[in-house]
Length: 268
Ligand code: NAP
Ligand code: GCO
Image (cartoon, rainbow, N blue to C red; front, side, top):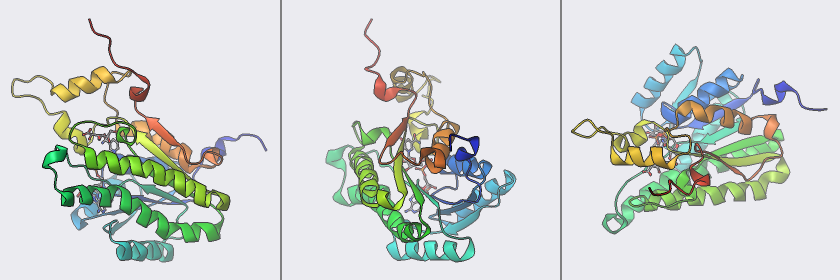
């Protein structure tokens, strides 16, 4: 059977998007709901889950929200068991929850480094490990890891984040290698610089009203000449969750307005 538009549909699918009470996770969840999926999400605090639930309701989406720290393996196992009981087996997992700490490496403590790696790398392992057994039984599954420009590039102050997101790219390839034979596709999305609260400090206006130097730097570095919006990630996320991408596995899809393709503005 050749291509049909319904290959992009997520009708009847159950998706878990971690840390999706705002930002990139919520934009992806809204796109999945529009494509027909049932949305489950978690966040680390009750206030965030409440805020997320209210936003989904306002958008006409009946989401299932749970409090769960993705670094706590017991809590994650319980979360997945609860979703299976209350909603059904998870067809699509998006490992979105993440943190960043912008501290020069020589000033960063080993504990701070570990915290970032714990949320951005260990947690995707923990959540994927919790959902894969039921995906194997069901005969299919999609795992999408939210990577970063820092899966490929380094920069001052983000050593832990870059180490974790680079590791997440390799975890993506390894899950593909280990479970591809069970019809599980594990891919990554590498967002470019996206306007969310996580990047707000990099976009703050200066006391004289001018744009933050980092903001100007990103505009100059991006062929699209703008920051990304969370909506820019919606189409790629639906594609990677849908049957249209069933032979795409172990890939990181960079959604970056062209940053990784560009050497940078020539002088003069
Ligand atoms: P974000 O500020 O990174 O937040 C994601 C959500 O995860 C927040 O609600 C956060 O709660 C939650 N979270 C943090 N630790 C958690 C834990 N242990 N358990 C459960 N939830 C936890 O938002 P974002 O900018 O939308 O980023 C989403 C993902 O995209 C992250 O993985 C990020 O690294 C990645 N990313 C972002 C950009 C960008 O430009 N914004 C670019 C590339 C990749 P709190 O609010 O309490 O922290
Ligand atoms: C930073 C940023 C980034 C982005 C993103 C890029 O301080 O450089 O926060 O790391 O958020 O992950 O893809």
